[in-house]
Length: 492
Ligand code: ADP
Image 1 (cartoon, rainbow, N blue to C red):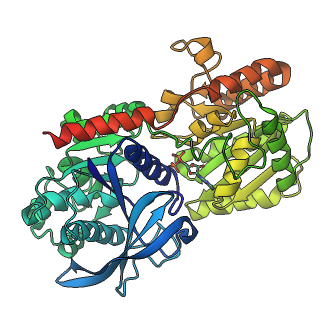
Image 2 (cartoon, rainbow, N blue to C red):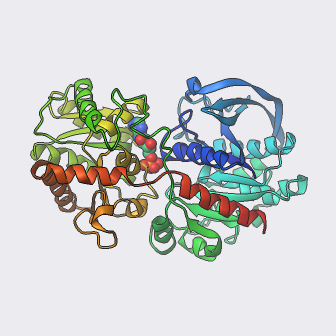
Image 3 (cartoon, rainbow, N blue to C red):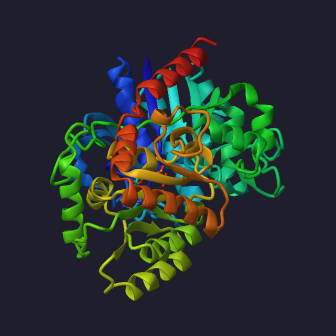
Protein backbone atom coordinates (compact mmCIF):
# COMPACT_ATOMS: atom_id res chain seq x y z
CA UNK A 1 0.00 0.00 0.00
CA UNK A 2 1.02 3.59 -0.55
CA UNK A 3 0.47 5.57 2.64
CA UNK A 4 1.02 9.27 3.29
CA UNK A 5 1.15 10.47 6.89
CA UNK A 6 0.34 14.16 7.38
CA UNK A 7 1.08 15.57 10.81
CA UNK A 8 2.43 18.53 12.72
CA UNK A 9 5.21 16.47 14.37
CA UNK A 10 7.58 13.63 13.60
CA UNK A 11 10.28 12.63 16.09
CA UNK A 12 13.08 13.38 16.46
CA UNK A 13 13.05 16.25 13.98
CA UNK A 14 9.83 17.82 15.30
CA UNK A 15 8.76 16.63 18.71
CA UNK A 16 6.70 18.35 21.37
CA UNK A 17 5.29 15.16 22.89
CA UNK A 18 4.04 11.68 22.10
CA UNK A 19 2.52 12.62 18.71
CA UNK A 20 6.01 12.93 17.21
CA UNK A 21 7.09 9.52 18.50
CA UNK A 22 3.95 7.88 17.19
CA UNK A 23 4.12 9.38 13.70
CA UNK A 24 7.72 8.26 13.32
CA UNK A 25 7.31 4.83 14.94
CA UNK A 26 4.15 3.93 13.04
CA UNK A 27 5.67 5.02 9.72
CA UNK A 28 8.73 2.87 10.31
CA UNK A 29 6.62 -0.16 11.22
CA UNK A 30 4.44 0.28 8.13
CA UNK A 31 7.53 0.36 5.94
CA UNK A 32 8.95 -2.75 7.57
CA UNK A 33 5.67 -4.41 6.66
CA UNK A 34 6.29 -3.67 2.99
CA UNK A 35 4.29 -0.49 2.49
CA UNK A 36 5.50 2.70 0.87
CA UNK A 37 5.28 5.52 3.38
CA UNK A 38 5.85 9.24 2.96
CA UNK A 39 5.37 12.02 5.47
CA UNK A 40 4.25 15.60 4.96
CA UNK A 41 5.24 18.05 7.69
CA UNK A 42 5.47 21.80 8.18
CA UNK A 43 8.97 23.24 7.82
CA UNK A 44 9.41 24.97 11.16
CA UNK A 45 12.42 27.21 11.71
CA UNK A 46 13.02 25.63 15.13
CA UNK A 47 12.97 21.96 14.17
CA UNK A 48 16.04 19.75 14.63
CA UNK A 49 17.67 20.10 11.19
CA UNK A 50 20.56 17.94 12.42
CA UNK A 51 18.23 14.93 12.22
CA UNK A 52 17.44 15.42 8.51
CA UNK A 53 19.64 13.75 5.94
CA UNK A 54 19.95 15.01 2.36
CA UNK A 55 17.52 17.92 2.54
CA UNK A 56 16.85 19.23 -0.97
CA UNK A 57 14.21 20.96 -3.06
CA UNK A 58 11.51 18.54 -4.09
CA UNK A 59 8.94 20.92 -5.53
CA UNK A 60 10.03 24.47 -5.99
CA UNK A 61 6.87 26.26 -6.92
CA UNK A 62 3.84 25.08 -5.06
CA UNK A 63 1.12 27.71 -5.33
CA UNK A 64 -1.48 27.21 -2.64
CA UNK A 65 -4.89 28.86 -3.03
CA UNK A 66 -5.48 30.97 0.07
CA UNK A 67 -8.29 33.49 0.42
CA UNK A 68 -8.76 34.95 -3.06
CA UNK A 69 -5.09 34.62 -4.06
CA UNK A 70 -2.29 32.12 -3.95
CA UNK A 71 0.65 31.64 -1.59
CA UNK A 72 4.01 30.60 -2.97
CA UNK A 73 5.53 27.61 -1.14
CA UNK A 74 8.54 25.37 -1.60
CA UNK A 75 8.52 21.72 -0.67
CA UNK A 76 11.78 20.31 0.59
CA UNK A 77 12.49 16.67 0.98
CA UNK A 78 14.88 14.70 3.17
CA UNK A 79 15.27 11.55 5.22
CA UNK A 80 14.63 11.49 8.95
CA UNK A 81 16.30 8.34 10.20
CA UNK A 82 15.23 6.49 7.09
CA UNK A 83 11.75 8.01 6.66
CA UNK A 84 11.10 10.09 3.56
CA UNK A 85 9.71 13.44 4.69
CA UNK A 86 8.38 16.39 2.68
CA UNK A 87 8.52 19.73 4.45
CA UNK A 88 6.21 22.53 3.37
CA UNK A 89 7.65 25.99 3.53
CA UNK A 90 5.37 28.92 2.75
CA UNK A 91 6.89 32.20 1.55
CA UNK A 92 4.36 34.66 2.83
CA UNK A 93 4.34 37.56 5.22
CA UNK A 94 2.45 35.44 7.73
CA UNK A 95 5.64 33.49 8.47
CA UNK A 96 3.43 30.65 9.65
CA UNK A 97 6.26 28.31 10.63
CA UNK A 98 9.02 30.78 11.47
CA UNK A 99 7.91 31.51 14.99
CA UNK A 100 10.56 29.76 17.07
CA UNK A 101 7.85 27.45 18.51
CA UNK A 102 5.71 24.63 17.15
CA UNK A 103 2.49 25.64 18.87
CA UNK A 104 1.06 28.37 21.03
CA UNK A 105 0.68 31.24 18.55
CA UNK A 106 -2.44 33.41 18.42
CA UNK A 107 -3.15 32.22 14.87
CA UNK A 108 -2.48 28.47 15.31
CA UNK A 109 -5.83 27.68 13.70
CA UNK A 110 -4.87 29.55 10.53
CA UNK A 111 -1.33 28.15 10.54
CA UNK A 112 -2.52 24.57 10.50
CA UNK A 113 -5.48 25.24 8.22
CA UNK A 114 -2.90 26.54 5.77
CA UNK A 115 -0.65 23.55 6.31
CA UNK A 116 -3.60 21.21 5.66
CA UNK A 117 -4.50 23.03 2.48
CA UNK A 118 -0.88 23.08 1.30
CA UNK A 119 -0.40 19.36 2.01
CA UNK A 120 -3.43 18.48 -0.11
CA UNK A 121 -2.38 20.88 -2.82
CA UNK A 122 1.08 19.25 -2.86
CA UNK A 123 -0.45 15.78 -3.28
CA UNK A 124 -2.70 17.12 -5.99
CA UNK A 125 -0.09 19.08 -7.98
CA UNK A 126 2.69 16.50 -7.69
CA UNK A 127 0.32 13.74 -8.79
CA UNK A 128 0.74 11.68 -5.65
CA UNK A 129 -2.24 9.42 -5.22
CA UNK A 130 -1.77 7.39 -2.03
CA UNK A 131 -4.17 4.62 -1.10
CA UNK A 132 -4.35 5.97 2.43
CA UNK A 133 -3.89 9.44 3.85
CA UNK A 134 -3.37 9.15 7.59
CA UNK A 135 -3.85 12.44 9.44
CA UNK A 136 -3.31 13.24 13.10
CA UNK A 137 -4.99 15.46 15.69
CA UNK A 138 -6.81 18.77 15.26
CA UNK A 139 -4.04 20.34 13.18
CA UNK A 140 -4.98 18.14 10.22
CA UNK A 141 -8.71 17.75 10.92
CA UNK A 142 -9.61 19.84 7.86
CA UNK A 143 -7.81 17.48 5.47
CA UNK A 144 -10.62 14.91 5.16
CA UNK A 145 -13.10 17.79 4.91
CA UNK A 146 -11.25 19.43 2.00
CA UNK A 147 -10.48 16.09 0.37
CA UNK A 148 -14.14 15.20 0.24
CA UNK A 149 -15.52 18.64 -0.51
CA UNK A 150 -12.88 19.92 -2.96
CA UNK A 151 -10.10 17.59 -4.00
CA UNK A 152 -12.15 14.55 -4.86
CA UNK A 153 -13.37 16.61 -7.81
CA UNK A 154 -9.76 17.16 -8.86
CA UNK A 155 -8.78 13.56 -9.40
CA UNK A 156 -8.48 12.53 -5.76
CA UNK A 157 -11.66 10.54 -5.42
CA UNK A 158 -10.00 7.26 -4.51
CA UNK A 159 -7.99 8.36 -1.51
CA UNK A 160 -9.17 7.09 1.88
CA UNK A 161 -8.51 8.85 5.15
CA UNK A 162 -7.68 7.46 8.57
CA UNK A 163 -7.88 10.10 11.31
CA UNK A 164 -6.11 9.49 14.61
CA UNK A 165 -6.95 11.57 17.65
CA UNK A 166 -4.09 11.78 20.11
CA UNK A 167 -5.68 14.36 22.37
CA UNK A 168 -9.36 15.31 22.49
CA UNK A 169 -8.70 18.36 24.61
CA UNK A 170 -7.35 20.42 21.74
CA UNK A 171 -9.87 20.42 18.92
CA UNK A 172 -9.02 23.43 16.76
CA UNK A 173 -11.72 26.08 16.91
CA UNK A 174 -12.12 28.57 14.08
CA UNK A 175 -14.60 30.92 12.50
CA UNK A 176 -15.85 31.76 9.08
CA UNK A 177 -12.46 33.17 8.01
CA UNK A 178 -11.06 29.63 7.93
CA UNK A 179 -13.66 28.71 5.35
CA UNK A 180 -12.92 31.77 3.31
CA UNK A 181 -9.18 31.15 3.43
CA UNK A 182 -9.33 27.47 2.52
CA UNK A 183 -11.90 27.75 -0.24
CA UNK A 184 -14.66 25.90 1.62
CA UNK A 185 -17.08 28.37 0.20
CA UNK A 186 -20.51 27.64 1.61
CA UNK A 187 -20.58 28.76 5.28
CA UNK A 188 -24.16 27.58 5.80
CA UNK A 189 -23.15 24.08 4.65
CA UNK A 190 -20.22 23.79 7.05
CA UNK A 191 -21.86 25.65 9.93
CA UNK A 192 -24.25 22.75 10.35
CA UNK A 193 -24.36 20.42 13.32
CA UNK A 194 -23.99 17.48 10.97
CA UNK A 195 -20.66 18.83 9.77
CA UNK A 196 -18.24 21.23 11.46
CA UNK A 197 -20.38 23.30 13.82
CA UNK A 198 -19.13 22.86 17.36
CA UNK A 199 -21.51 20.80 19.50
CA UNK A 200 -21.58 23.40 22.28
CA UNK A 201 -20.60 26.75 20.81
CA UNK A 202 -22.89 27.44 17.85
CA UNK A 203 -20.70 30.29 16.59
CA UNK A 204 -17.57 28.29 15.84
CA UNK A 205 -16.27 25.51 13.64
CA UNK A 206 -14.55 22.52 15.17
CA UNK A 207 -11.71 21.00 13.10
CA UNK A 208 -11.64 17.76 15.05
CA UNK A 209 -15.37 17.27 14.59
CA UNK A 210 -14.82 17.79 10.86
CA UNK A 211 -12.12 15.15 10.96
CA UNK A 212 -14.44 12.65 12.61
CA UNK A 213 -17.37 13.35 10.31
CA UNK A 214 -15.44 13.23 7.03
CA UNK A 215 -12.84 10.47 7.59
CA UNK A 216 -13.27 6.86 6.57
CA UNK A 217 -11.89 5.59 9.87
CA UNK A 218 -11.28 7.34 13.18
CA UNK A 219 -9.00 6.01 15.87
CA UNK A 220 -7.73 7.12 19.20
CA UNK A 221 -4.59 5.86 20.82
CA UNK A 222 -5.77 3.21 23.28
CA UNK A 223 -8.83 1.01 23.64
CA UNK A 224 -9.64 2.32 27.12
CA UNK A 225 -9.47 5.93 26.01
CA UNK A 226 -11.77 5.14 23.08
CA UNK A 227 -14.30 3.94 25.65
CA UNK A 228 -13.75 7.00 27.89
CA UNK A 229 -14.12 9.44 25.00
CA UNK A 230 -17.26 7.75 23.72
CA UNK A 231 -19.07 7.15 27.01
CA UNK A 232 -17.37 9.48 29.51
CA UNK A 233 -16.27 13.10 29.68
CA UNK A 234 -12.93 12.66 27.95
CA UNK A 235 -14.34 13.32 24.50
CA UNK A 236 -14.49 16.99 25.59
CA UNK A 237 -17.84 17.57 23.95
CA UNK A 238 -17.36 15.18 21.02
CA UNK A 239 -18.88 12.13 22.73
CA UNK A 240 -22.12 12.52 20.82
CA UNK A 241 -20.31 12.83 17.49
CA UNK A 242 -18.30 9.72 18.33
CA UNK A 243 -21.52 7.95 19.15
CA UNK A 244 -23.02 8.86 15.78
CA UNK A 245 -19.88 7.56 14.06
CA UNK A 246 -19.24 4.67 16.46
CA UNK A 247 -19.04 2.17 13.60
CA UNK A 248 -15.86 3.74 12.29
CA UNK A 249 -14.30 4.62 15.67
CA UNK A 250 -11.82 2.35 17.49
CA UNK A 251 -8.91 2.52 19.90
CA UNK A 252 -5.53 1.17 18.83
CA UNK A 253 -2.81 1.22 21.46
CA UNK A 254 0.30 3.16 20.46
CA UNK A 255 3.57 1.32 20.28
CA UNK A 256 7.13 2.18 21.20
CA UNK A 257 9.98 2.08 18.74
CA UNK A 258 12.35 -0.37 20.42
CA UNK A 259 15.17 0.66 18.09
CA UNK A 260 15.18 4.00 19.84
CA UNK A 261 13.78 3.18 23.26
CA UNK A 262 15.84 0.18 24.27
CA UNK A 263 18.54 0.15 26.97
CA UNK A 264 20.45 -2.54 25.05
CA UNK A 265 21.19 -0.22 22.11
CA UNK A 266 20.50 3.28 23.43
CA UNK A 267 23.47 5.47 22.58
CA UNK A 268 22.28 8.39 24.71
CA UNK A 269 22.99 6.45 27.90
CA UNK A 270 26.55 5.77 29.08
CA UNK A 271 25.93 2.14 30.13
CA UNK A 272 23.82 -0.22 28.04
CA UNK A 273 22.04 -3.02 29.87
CA UNK A 274 19.56 -5.82 29.37
CA UNK A 275 17.18 -8.03 31.35
CA UNK A 276 19.88 -10.61 32.02
CA UNK A 277 22.57 -8.08 32.86
CA UNK A 278 21.28 -5.19 34.91
CA UNK A 279 24.61 -3.83 36.14
CA UNK A 280 24.36 -0.93 33.68
CA UNK A 281 21.11 0.25 35.25
CA UNK A 282 22.87 0.94 38.58
CA UNK A 283 25.75 2.65 36.75
CA UNK A 284 23.30 4.87 34.89
CA UNK A 285 21.70 5.82 38.19
CA UNK A 286 25.12 6.88 39.42
CA UNK A 287 25.80 8.79 36.19
CA UNK A 288 22.45 10.55 36.43
CA UNK A 289 23.13 11.56 40.02
CA UNK A 290 26.53 12.87 39.05
CA UNK A 291 25.17 14.84 36.13
CA UNK A 292 22.40 16.41 38.21
CA UNK A 293 24.57 16.83 41.32
CA UNK A 294 22.45 14.60 43.54
CA UNK A 295 24.02 12.77 46.44
CA UNK A 296 24.98 9.17 45.76
CA UNK A 297 23.20 7.49 48.63
CA UNK A 298 22.56 3.75 48.18
CA UNK A 299 19.65 3.80 50.61
CA UNK A 300 17.55 6.09 48.41
CA UNK A 301 15.39 5.10 45.48
CA UNK A 302 15.20 7.60 42.64
CA UNK A 303 11.75 8.57 41.39
CA UNK A 304 11.20 10.63 38.26
CA UNK A 305 8.61 12.47 36.22
CA UNK A 306 9.07 13.16 32.50
CA UNK A 307 6.44 14.97 30.50
CA UNK A 308 4.77 18.17 29.48
CA UNK A 309 3.92 20.32 32.49
CA UNK A 310 0.27 20.65 31.61
CA UNK A 311 -2.98 20.31 33.58
CA UNK A 312 -3.52 17.04 31.71
CA UNK A 313 -0.56 15.50 33.52
CA UNK A 314 -1.98 16.10 37.03
CA UNK A 315 0.27 18.96 38.06
CA UNK A 316 -0.81 19.14 41.69
CA UNK A 317 -0.03 15.44 42.08
CA UNK A 318 3.34 15.79 40.34
CA UNK A 319 4.12 18.60 42.78
CA UNK A 320 2.99 16.51 45.71
CA UNK A 321 5.03 13.53 44.51
CA UNK A 322 8.23 15.60 44.81
CA UNK A 323 7.64 16.40 48.47
CA UNK A 324 6.28 12.97 49.30
CA UNK A 325 9.41 11.38 47.84
CA UNK A 326 11.63 13.67 49.91
CA UNK A 327 9.62 12.96 53.05
CA UNK A 328 10.17 9.25 52.48
CA UNK A 329 13.93 9.53 51.95
CA UNK A 330 13.71 9.06 48.22
CA UNK A 331 15.18 11.25 45.49
CA UNK A 332 13.19 12.98 42.78
CA UNK A 333 14.10 14.14 39.27
CA UNK A 334 11.65 16.07 37.10
CA UNK A 335 12.09 16.84 33.41
CA UNK A 336 9.27 18.88 31.97
CA UNK A 337 8.41 21.76 29.73
CA UNK A 338 5.43 23.89 30.62
CA UNK A 339 2.77 24.72 28.10
CA UNK A 340 1.28 27.42 30.28
CA UNK A 341 2.89 30.51 31.79
CA UNK A 342 1.43 30.02 35.29
CA UNK A 343 2.64 26.41 35.51
CA UNK A 344 6.04 27.49 34.26
CA UNK A 345 6.29 30.15 36.97
CA UNK A 346 5.11 27.71 39.62
CA UNK A 347 7.69 25.06 38.77
CA UNK A 348 10.46 27.62 38.20
CA UNK A 349 9.77 28.81 41.71
CA UNK A 350 9.98 25.24 43.05
CA UNK A 351 13.19 24.67 41.14
CA UNK A 352 14.81 27.74 42.68
CA UNK A 353 13.49 26.88 46.11
CA UNK A 354 14.93 23.35 45.95
CA UNK A 355 18.05 24.20 44.00
CA UNK A 356 20.50 23.33 46.79
CA UNK A 357 18.68 20.21 47.95
CA UNK A 358 20.91 17.14 47.47
CA UNK A 359 17.97 14.82 46.68
CA UNK A 360 15.97 16.65 44.08
CA UNK A 361 16.50 18.17 40.67
CA UNK A 362 13.90 19.93 38.55
CA UNK A 363 14.93 20.44 34.93
CA UNK A 364 12.57 22.74 33.06
CA UNK A 365 12.66 22.56 29.29
CA UNK A 366 12.75 19.93 26.58
CA UNK A 367 15.80 17.68 26.54
CA UNK A 368 15.62 14.46 24.54
CA UNK A 369 19.11 13.25 25.51
CA UNK A 370 18.57 13.79 29.23
CA UNK A 371 15.22 12.02 29.08
CA UNK A 372 16.97 8.80 28.01
CA UNK A 373 19.38 8.97 30.94
CA UNK A 374 16.52 9.58 33.37
CA UNK A 375 14.52 6.61 32.05
CA UNK A 376 17.65 4.48 32.43
CA UNK A 377 18.80 5.81 35.81
CA UNK A 378 15.53 6.08 37.75
CA UNK A 379 13.94 3.32 39.83
CA UNK A 380 10.36 4.51 39.42
CA UNK A 381 8.36 7.01 37.39
CA UNK A 382 5.15 8.73 38.44
CA UNK A 383 2.42 9.37 35.87
CA UNK A 384 -0.50 10.84 37.84
CA UNK A 385 -2.40 12.17 34.81
CA UNK A 386 -5.90 13.59 34.94
CA UNK A 387 -6.42 12.02 31.54
CA UNK A 388 -3.99 10.15 29.33
CA UNK A 389 -5.08 9.03 25.86
CA UNK A 390 -2.23 6.52 25.66
CA UNK A 391 0.89 7.72 27.45
CA UNK A 392 4.32 6.73 26.22
CA UNK A 393 6.42 7.52 29.28
CA UNK A 394 5.15 4.52 31.24
CA UNK A 395 5.78 2.20 28.28
CA UNK A 396 9.29 3.56 27.78
CA UNK A 397 9.95 3.23 31.51
CA UNK A 398 8.86 -0.40 31.50
CA UNK A 399 11.45 -1.16 28.83
CA UNK A 400 14.15 0.53 30.95
CA UNK A 401 13.24 -1.38 34.12
CA UNK A 402 11.82 1.75 35.73
CA UNK A 403 8.66 0.83 37.62
CA UNK A 404 5.63 2.99 36.74
CA UNK A 405 3.31 4.41 39.41
CA UNK A 406 0.30 5.62 37.45
CA UNK A 407 -3.24 6.82 37.76
CA UNK A 408 -5.70 4.35 36.23
CA UNK A 409 -6.95 6.36 33.25
CA UNK A 410 -6.83 5.99 29.47
CA UNK A 411 -3.94 4.05 28.00
CA UNK A 412 -2.36 3.70 31.44
CA UNK A 413 -5.10 1.15 32.18
CA UNK A 414 -4.10 -0.85 29.09
CA UNK A 415 -0.40 -0.90 29.92
CA UNK A 416 0.23 -0.88 33.69
CA UNK A 417 -1.08 -3.64 35.94
CA UNK A 418 -0.92 -3.22 39.70
CA UNK A 419 1.46 -5.57 41.45
CA UNK A 420 -0.77 -6.01 44.49
CA UNK A 421 -4.37 -5.51 43.39
CA UNK A 422 -4.83 -6.33 39.70
CA UNK A 423 -7.11 -9.32 39.44
CA UNK A 424 -7.26 -9.47 35.66
CA UNK A 425 -3.59 -10.30 35.24
CA UNK A 426 -1.52 -13.12 36.69
CA UNK A 427 1.06 -12.01 39.30
CA UNK A 428 3.88 -12.59 36.80
CA UNK A 429 2.22 -10.26 34.26
CA UNK A 430 1.98 -7.33 36.65
CA UNK A 431 4.41 -4.51 36.17
CA UNK A 432 3.75 -1.45 38.36
CA UNK A 433 1.43 0.40 40.69
CA UNK A 434 -1.94 1.93 39.92
CA UNK A 435 -4.13 4.35 41.89
CA UNK A 436 -7.43 5.83 40.86
CA UNK A 437 -8.47 8.89 42.86
CA UNK A 438 -6.99 12.32 42.10
CA UNK A 439 -6.17 13.18 45.71
CA UNK A 440 -2.80 13.17 47.44
CA UNK A 441 -3.62 10.13 49.58
CA UNK A 442 -4.19 7.89 46.59
CA UNK A 443 -0.83 8.87 45.10
CA UNK A 444 0.90 8.52 48.46
CA UNK A 445 -0.43 5.03 49.04
CA UNK A 446 0.84 3.85 45.63
CA UNK A 447 4.21 5.55 46.14
CA UNK A 448 4.50 4.06 49.62
CA UNK A 449 3.91 0.58 48.26
CA UNK A 450 6.56 1.06 45.59
CA UNK A 451 9.14 2.63 47.92
CA UNK A 452 8.38 0.00 50.58
CA UNK A 453 9.02 -2.84 48.14
CA UNK A 454 12.25 -1.21 46.90
CA UNK A 455 13.53 -0.79 50.44
CA UNK A 456 12.29 -3.90 52.23
CA UNK A 457 12.08 -6.51 49.47
CA UNK A 458 14.75 -5.66 46.89
CA UNK A 459 14.55 -9.09 45.22
CA UNK A 460 10.82 -8.66 44.76
CA UNK A 461 11.38 -5.18 43.35
CA UNK A 462 14.01 -6.53 40.95
CA UNK A 463 11.49 -9.16 39.84
CA UNK A 464 8.87 -6.49 39.21
CA UNK A 465 11.37 -4.51 37.11
CA UNK A 466 12.07 -7.58 34.98
CA UNK A 467 8.40 -8.32 34.50
CA UNK A 468 8.05 -4.80 33.13
CA UNK A 469 11.00 -5.24 30.81
CA UNK A 470 9.42 -8.38 29.44
CA UNK A 471 6.23 -6.58 28.32
CA UNK A 472 5.98 -6.13 24.57
CA UNK A 473 4.66 -2.69 23.67
CA UNK A 474 6.44 -2.59 20.33
CA UNK A 475 4.76 -1.42 17.12
CA UNK A 476 4.24 -5.00 16.02
CA UNK A 477 0.60 -5.46 17.10
CA UNK A 478 -0.52 -1.85 16.54
CA UNK A 479 1.18 -1.90 13.12
CA UNK A 480 -0.82 -4.97 12.19
CA UNK A 481 -4.02 -3.34 13.46
CA UNK A 482 -3.44 -0.20 11.37
CA UNK A 483 -2.67 -2.22 8.24
CA UNK A 484 -5.91 -4.15 8.70
CA UNK A 485 -7.81 -0.92 9.16
CA UNK A 486 -6.23 0.64 6.07
CA UNK A 487 -7.08 -2.43 4.00
CA UNK A 488 -10.63 -2.35 5.28
CA UNK A 489 -11.23 1.28 4.28
CA UNK A 490 -9.31 0.97 1.02
CA UNK A 491 -11.49 -1.91 -0.15
CA UNK A 492 -14.76 -0.31 0.89
P1 ADP B 1 2.06 13.60 25.50
O1 ADP B 1 1.93 13.14 24.09
O2 ADP B 1 0.76 13.88 26.17
O3 ADP B 1 3.01 14.74 25.66
P2 ADP B 1 3.23 10.98 25.99
O4 ADP B 1 3.49 10.26 27.26
O5 ADP B 1 2.34 10.30 25.00
O6 ADP B 1 2.70 12.42 26.38
O7 ADP B 1 4.61 11.26 25.22
C1 ADP B 1 5.59 12.04 25.78
C2 ADP B 1 6.86 11.91 24.95
O8 ADP B 1 7.58 13.14 25.01
C3 ADP B 1 7.82 10.87 25.51
O9 ADP B 1 8.66 10.40 24.48
C4 ADP B 1 8.64 11.68 26.51
O10 ADP B 1 9.89 11.09 26.78
C5 ADP B 1 8.78 12.98 25.77
N1 ADP B 1 8.93 14.18 26.60
C6 ADP B 1 7.95 14.85 27.26
N2 ADP B 1 8.45 15.93 27.87
C7 ADP B 1 9.77 15.95 27.61
C8 ADP B 1 10.84 16.83 27.96
N3 ADP B 1 10.63 17.89 28.72
N4 ADP B 1 12.07 16.54 27.49
C9 ADP B 1 12.28 15.46 26.72
N5 ADP B 1 11.32 14.59 26.35
C10 ADP B 1 10.08 14.83 26.79
